[in-house]
Image (cartoon, rainbow over all chains, first blue to last red; front, top):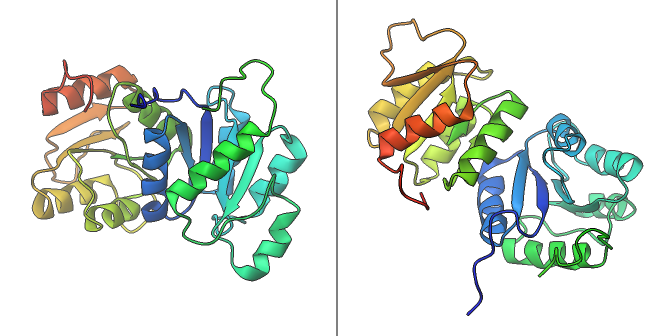
Length: 138
Length: 117
């Protein structure tokens, strides 16, 4: 039987989503899967979270409809923290093409299922090298 | 539920509460908190700032919760005590240490020795 992972054992995910009713269940699911989840509601909060070393963010999941420009956080991460894994969610079709160049991997459909998001985060984090902790991803 | 518009306060309080074993919902305004309440979230305690942007402040939120969701306990926080006629059940003055919040919630729920809350 698989043992329940400890809170934060698998790294820290910044979840930037303006809609609390979307953010709440996804954050809860990721926490149950062992991630520490830092929540942000605006692009300003998201950048603050990434810049603050106390949170030690390892991956960013941002809604394209995030308050203050959904792609702004992606551009900022790409420019200032290219070491971070970036995933954009909730993208309408026309935004998918624009987002493609900003994502580490690819975009996700609107109203993403938490299980699908988890698989994508694991896959994307696993594809990155963590010199200090190779056991970060189970 | 932690309701606070100041990002770092909200994020740090929520993170500390989670480390203490609580499941925490974060909201940046009373309006957002009402969305969560009306969605049927299973909440025990709301820890809310008084001064917040939006259509209502923390006192108004507490008043609504006490009427519509009487099983949910409300803890208010502010640099100034609530003064517009609402007698807060619990109030924590700012600035506060997160331990004060945890102790207050533990006292409300009787969970001080419970590992998972």
